[in-house]
Image (cartoon, rainbow, N blue to C red; front, side, top):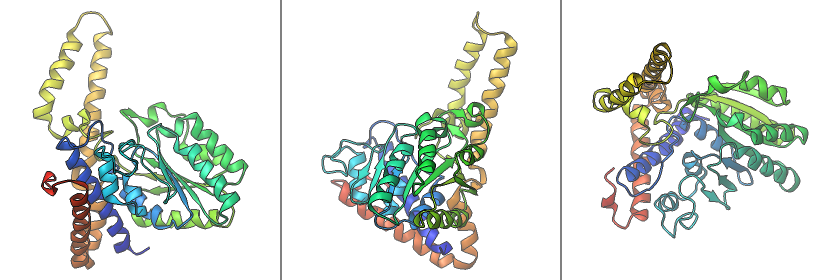
Length: 343
């Protein structure tokens, strides 16, 4: 796929999720909001290879994929705001979005995309020859038993499933490496899947891997596993305290530091050495979160824009203006008064 086409898809996904974020910050969306900012290159490249009859199982960061599959943006916005005329009649929120017409289903249950994807794959094999199922999940979910069982079943039954692991190194607030035995790619190979490890921040790399995986699946050659290494730009959810503290250490850090020092000086509990070690680990964690966004090096859109602007500056600006207008039109339909949205 051409780089400009990939960028247009990435930009559309980002523009939509920024609109969701703004609605959440205004209090128009309740509860936690989990965005897929940082995953746009993966969503754009994988969905570009899908066609009618293909199905997709999604995790709680599902909106980018649904938008790129052509699900009505206004319907997603209404659903996220709890409107009865939303995509799922206001019953699903943003984590459990589903579209029967697009054969797309999301779940907030960690690892649930595995068995859902295997089920979609079985249906494709029996009912829609040549169709493919895709399952999106994070590296934290890769440690869930039901997902591992799905990898096994997909291989044993040679199902046309592509398992896409969005590996950002985090399982909520836990560093995935600290709770994962072995290597995820090696684990998938152990089940007999064909594995590709790619830079999930580079749309072209993901597109090349997707092309190979879809080709295998459509030919009836069995499942694949794509480990796409990416970044989680907005933390586990909007308002993530680690991200807030890392971004505004002076403003947010004072209150956090007060609590940490109070706990450190409290009698009882661990030794001073243990407490000092915990404090050092927390400091390193905050520095890592801060550095995650520094210079845009972990932002797929920033990286793509820097490359494309050298030769396609005008086209890039036109793409960005187009997607902003598309999202604004969706907002005007979703909100009773578009002035509710300050984007």
